[in-house]
Length: 147
Image 1 (tube, rainbow, N blue to C red):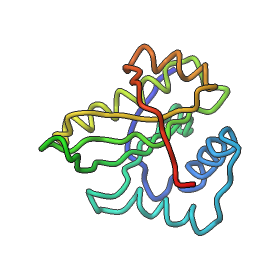
Image 2 (cartoon, rainbow, N blue to C red):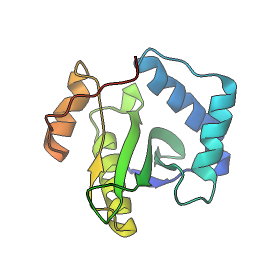
Image 3 (tube, rainbow, N blue to C red):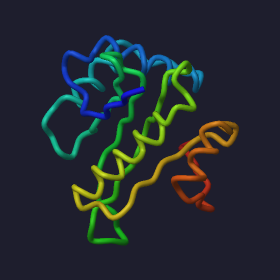
């Protein structure tokens, strides 16, 4: 399989949306159509402080995506990178798509001058965590949200 990782382009909207729907379905959530519109607009916009998106493509078909952003960090001078979403279509898992997307985010962070990349996942996401254990370091932090 010949895999290309590249930035999201405006013409990717239908395939990107199908992939993101799959990602949200995995996490048992839905968003309204206006959120899809706003999210995609952010991804293809030109604000360097907004979200960035990469897609994995093979034979002209999008088979994976990742969304990330750079932000300031109070403990460091350099910005850091938050990898918010990572998804490979189920029929393409186990072929290196997730690893290639993460490594592309690492490359984007290095090019930007960010000194780190971090992400969250649910503890039951054992398949993805097998990859994450190979390409990242598990931290002891626990996430809380507003009650």
